[in-house]
Length: 312
Image 1 (tube, rainbow, N blue to C red):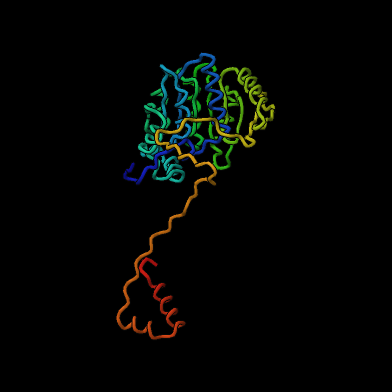
Image 2: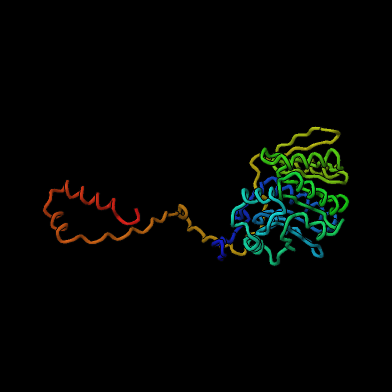
């Protein structure tokens, strides 16, 4: 598949999709969403900032019948201000296009989510209040934008719904950190748990979620757990210990590898060498010189000719 920006490489499995979605966060997305569904909770899904679609594809697997799924990203659109434009130019390559996102998503799903192309400030006018059970925010890292995204999430989430804030603690995203902890201290957001990259929270009661989460983690040996209290909040911190990604269906472009014959050492991979350029023919005088000169001189002539081959 090609575009004006070049070839779009279609993914065969989720790991082929570019993006930052650690294994532990895949497990937690699956756990929070599965728990909602098992409890009969219904509500829409929202992701703000999709990049190439890795977490969006994962979220789309949990869309239930009758629910709506909305994603929002600038893609090729103009940023709303100079600071956001500079951030987008620095952080994303020219391959971040709506067409690339949609191609990746449709490799795993039959239908696209509802796509909003533009700044995240358009979300409150496009997504109904109290309509979502799960919101993932991974858009701008600028404080003013993140603060607005958190406000939108608070108004859009159903009671007890879950919001996930990406990059809440990275050294290059202080705006996210300030906006996230400001929401915890002053705006009623209750942290449920923290991972290396994401803060999971709710404006509802966090205790039932935390107790169920602690029970789940207690049965695993691949997840480090610590508990702290800060500003009246119980904070659960999780870290992967060699965790494997949860199973996820292959894309429609997956090709099952051919079985290895019994007793075989397995398939070998041979590196392909670039095809050598043909050497230009020698002139009559040079051919005669090569035939008559001593071998050491002949080798020197051939070496010099090789150094002048086209393409060097």
